[in-house]
Length: 119
Image (cartoon, rainbow, N blue to C red; front, side):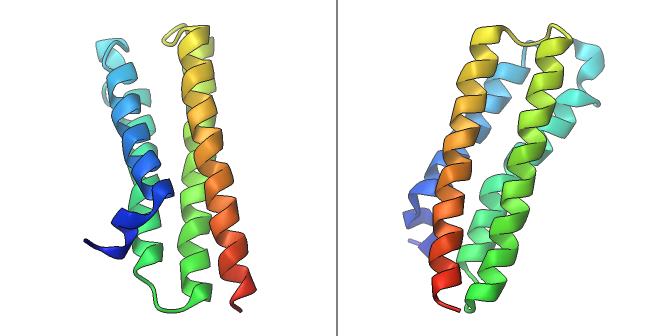
């Protein structure tokens, strides 16, 4: 098992990507190359950057990838809000997805604090 696969934050981020894919399936077909693509790519980059950060030997490098993952989480959160305002997501779906994204963000912040303590 690779080191990132043991991280709970990575596991939750992968599950979040699956949730994002399921919730964006119902978006209008004309958004397939617009908002749907953007949300999915940003969501996928969260666990991808977590994995890359976990593979780095130095805390400073790991922190850079955690920061990128946090930025992608903020991007997803913004795009979900826009999706709700456009009527593509229900209030309930927005709350569920945003809550999951927030939890992943808190976990990444904790991991970042741990990495900073190693500097």
